[in-house]
Amino acid sequence: MDFSLSVEEREIRDWVRTFVQRELLPREQEVLRRERAGQPGLTSDELEELQLKARDSGFWGVQTPEEYGGMGLSAVMTALLEAELGRTFVPFRFGGAADNILFYANEEQKQRYLLPTIEGKRKSCFAITEPGAGSDAKAIRTTARKDGGDWVINGEKTFITGGNEADFVMVFAITDPERGANGGVTCFLVDRDMGWRSEYIDTMGEWGPAALVFEDVRVPESQILGELGQGFNLAMQWIGRGRYLLPARAIGSCERLLSMAIEHANTRETFGAPIAERQAIQWMIADSGVEIEALRWLVLHAAWQVDSGMDSRHAQSIAKLYGGVKANEIVDRVLQIHGGMGYTRELPIERWYRELRLLRIYEGTDEIQRRTIARNLLKGHAKVGGALG
Image 1 (cartoon, rainbow, N blue to C red):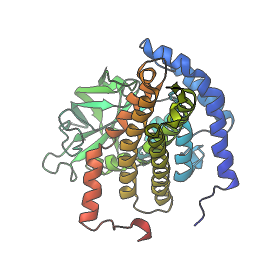
Image 2: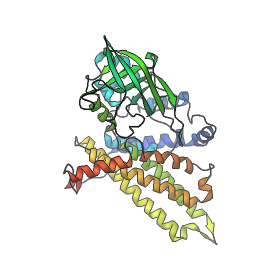
Image 3: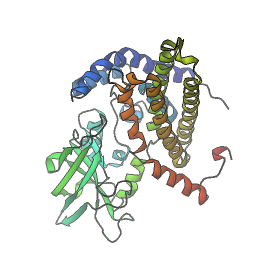
Image 4: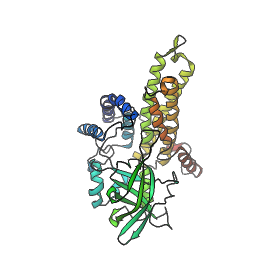
């Protein structure tokens, strides 16, 4: 069992680490200043400039297949890169990506939606979550009614990432009420200028999701993504496309936070000695170090299963659950070690505190992950002992 990286993998990982250090870390204070003023941490022009700078070095479409101009990196390699990006709170992401279900588009739709999205000329969002439904993805109430050669969509979606910026949406609606999620949900590609609107949702973090409102939005039959009635299967593929990447990014955040705690513990003195000599502090640092390593291997194991073509949903749920819980415990300890200064906005700890809290909610709450894990074990879909038996 070889846990080492290849020369190429190490070079890719190290390039991203250097990019973070040179291009992103120097922007942190300005990002904090802007966010405190209610402004975006990075403007769209600044994000594009950084993405193009990365593209000049070949970093474009990290997981996008090579045939579409991407790097086509493995799941393991992508997880390692997410961990590196997580070392900073500067809201950067590599360009050249498109939602995985857009690859199910027909040729005409690929020209109108997939390829321009990969090139960064169009922005998409994924809309399934609804008010009152939350984690129950099957409780969709948004409807699409056939009217001649068109479909008329009515309903509301909520907490939609990128919904305020997107110029088109992949929206899921009931097209056959009797069948519901079992063959009665369809995905539509709907341009903003077809009539839907977005409303900003203010949150405790810097993430700005949207509510999307559809009032008699008329779309032609050609806007169906995939097959009529098979939208719920597409939605589950989107949700399960890379759940391991969320805790992967948290690895980098926790490593950075723990490094801050170690430095502070070694320099902050109370009662004539560094607080690093206090057992209470030592145990918080030790527990955090152990949990970061455990999270790293849970994430990489889930990613390895993806690369191996295995059903990785159970492993991804474990990584997502553990990552969300432990990342929140670690940032809480780091804030505690910093005392009153950790609670202020002079340090970025409180900013990470708010950001990491979201990890326990979006793309599957802790409770949903526990439900999934328990169901798999109780019904024998997963075995105690995991992939090694």
